[in-house]
Length: 136
Image 1 (cartoon, rainbow, N blue to C red):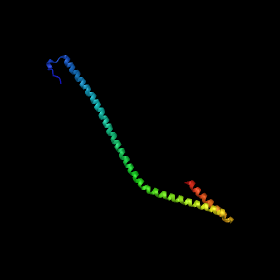
Image 2 (spheres, rainbow, N blue to C red):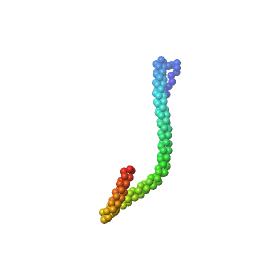
Image 3 (cartoon, rainbow, N blue to C red):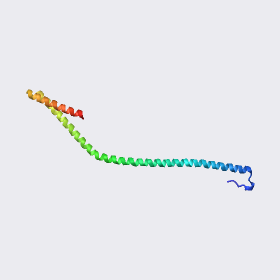
């Protein structure tokens, strides 16, 4: 800090300089106030954004928990359905093998009525299996 000049000894130039310094200080204060206001506005925006994201996180967490419960409920059902499908596919393969056996019997049977019956049954079985497979 500089030495103070008694008011009676202050010249016009010294007063002008003091007024100029005061004007500069006020201008700097205004700049700092503007920066502070902008910073405060940004902080408020960030707080608002944080609160919004916090709400979204809460929602996502709730959805994830709900999904987890749902998955736990349906997994056993899916496993059961998969096992049933595998058993059905195995049964279909057994029926196809039976149709092949009927074709083999057709080839080795001497009796014409039996041959027609074997061929008819084998053809009908295959047609029904193919029809069912086309529907799925």
